[in-house]
Image (cartoon, rainbow, N blue to C red; front, side):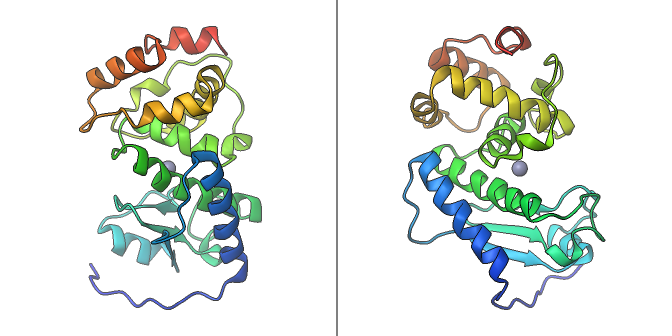
Length: 211
Ligand SMILES: [Zn+2]
């Protein structure tokens, strides 16, 4: 696998515009003025390079990742988007992708963990406007399984679950609570966090009652 990559500064005005817009909106949502040392976006030209960066074969639905960094995003280029993934390209879709990945970086300022994956993905889906892509579930039944593995419901169900939670708790209180998450996060510690900060027993029952 390749270990050396060529990078050049992008002149892609559309992607630059999406980045700037997403940053403004996320600074407002998270109430964080991220003006210095701002995130770097790396546009990856094709799936092969994506795989080389990851050092493994990536799934065909994966089009962006922070690769565990707290400052850099890697996103599949608009030109390779349809050829090298299962997604259909649209400007709205691509803006959502950039905003989703940037949202992960904002979230990491508040707590330094990607786990529970359903929770961090749910926050990224909700804050990036990607809920539009999914149909609201009739019942929650699966998302809590995705603590350290990923599946569809970690995005679709979890995005709606996070929306419900933020609307019930209130955004300010929700964001304040995130700073209380201690790492490393375990399933047990996250349940305790949930109970202590939101006064909710973490289960499908509460989410279904509030659906
Ligand atoms: Zn994500």
